[in-house]
Image 1 (cartoon, rainbow, N blue to C red):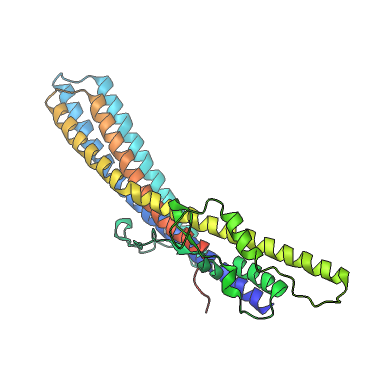
Image 2: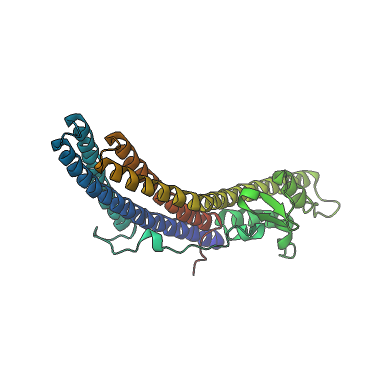
Length: 310
């Protein structure tokens, strides 16, 4: 009973930490998106003013300027929406912390440092920190053992490697992890009963052993899948980081070029509109990818059972 209460306490604690972290980093993401949207709105304001000047000079028509103004107002609306989301997120954070809602001091998304070695792989035995795995392990132990001598044998020599999936210590891919785990755990399931025991009791005990073994295997597989999902998400986000940066840089160059061409009347407003909108979308996506990278680390923290309770 005490062990179950400790596991429950750790599960709740880990969930709370993950929720607070996710909410905090959501705030940082929204802050960055707001900054980008405000900068874009200001740039559009200048573009609209330039377009009006060109219209007065007879180079643009009212329809073109109206289209640019409509886009400018759309970006302003996004700014208002983001401010509302920030306010709601701060309220959610206050609720999690049992505090009065307020404007929280915080850093910047770009300044956050995440571990760089998550692609190395995670031994399956690290899943023993999870409350659900520990509970299933105790049930298995109770069904088969009276000591902890074979505890290490509960966890086959598997490494969780994200996009590489389940691998053994030699780095070879395990095609069927469920079968691998079942075979490894199955070797521990020899009945430990003396001769002459009641046949009915023996059957019940064997059924309990099989139930505990299957429950442990499934819990271990589910936990491993969660870890692999988190690792894959992290690795995927890291792979996209440089690509998004190159995309943003290219679009920034496009915006500069089309804006200059518009001033000299050698391009139309649609090219400027498309370039600015594409740049903003790319910047917002870049920020979202950075947030998802951080979120995958938080998910990995949860999948590995969180921090140890004191």
